[in-house]
Length: 309
Image 1 (cartoon, rainbow, N blue to C red):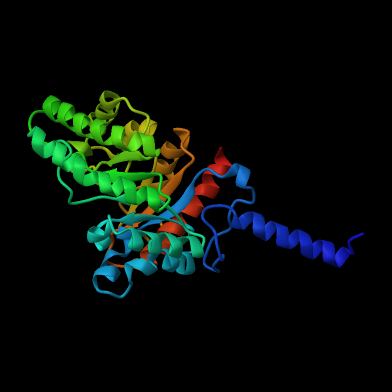
Image 2 (image 1 turned 90 degrees about the horizontal axis):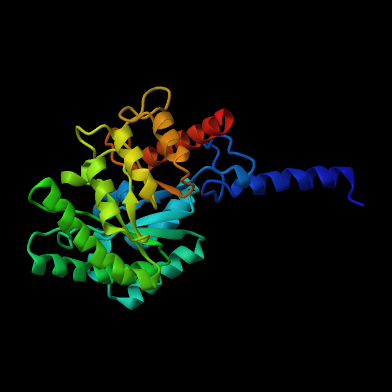
C-alpha cells in the first residue's frame, strides 16, 4: 500500500508529467501559463520556425546546428521547422544532414518541415525552367526525409493571367509531389506573395493538383490586402502545417496585427490538430523574447478555446 504522503507526491508528479506532454513541452519554464491537463484535449501543438531567429543566425550569435537544442532549452518547445538558407549548400551532404538529425534527436526535438527558398519558380511559364525548379527541390525532399520531417514548404511563384498561373503552379507542384509521394513526404505551399496570397486562388491550385501529399501552410500574415481570416479559412482544408506569424504585442500580450483568438478558432474549427509554428518577425522585441511572447499567447488562446468549446 502506498503511504498517503507518497501517494500525494506521486499524483503531483503524474500531473506535472501529463501537463508536460501538451504543446511541445520539455522543461516547463516559470513564465508559461497554465497548460491543459489532458493530452486528450490537445487542440494543437506548438513548434518554432527557424526564421524566427534568422537575425541571430545571420549575426553568428546562434549556429544553425545548435538551433534545435536552443529552441528546446530556451523555449521548452520540442518541434522545429528548419529554413534552408542557413544550410543551403548542405542539402546533399549526408554527413551534415546526419549530424543535424543526431543533434535534434539527442535533445528530443522533432523536425516537421524545411522551408525552401531560392530554388526556382515551380510555376515558371517556361517548361524547361519549371522542370529545373522541380529538380532543384528534389534534393530538399530527400534531405527533409533524412531529418525526419513530414514535408517541405515551397513557393508557388508564377506569371501570366490568373488562370495561367493556376495551371502552371499546379503543374510544377504536381511534378514535385509525385516525386515526394513514394518517400511519404508532403509538398506544402505557403501564402507567400503574388497570387499565392489570394486564398481562393491557392485553394483552387490545391484542387487542381489533386494529390493528398500536396497541401498548404497557411500563414497568418502575407495576405497583403486579402482578408487574412478569410484566406486562412480557405486554406485550412488543405493545411498540413500552420504558421503563427507575429510582429508585436500590446500591453495585454495580444498580437497587434492578428486577432489570435479569432484566427486560432478558424484553425481549430477546421478540424486541424497538427503543429502551429511560431514565426516571429518583429523588431521591437529581441527574437527570443518575441518567440516567448507568441508562445504565451498561443497557450492562452488554447486554454480559452478549450473553455469555450
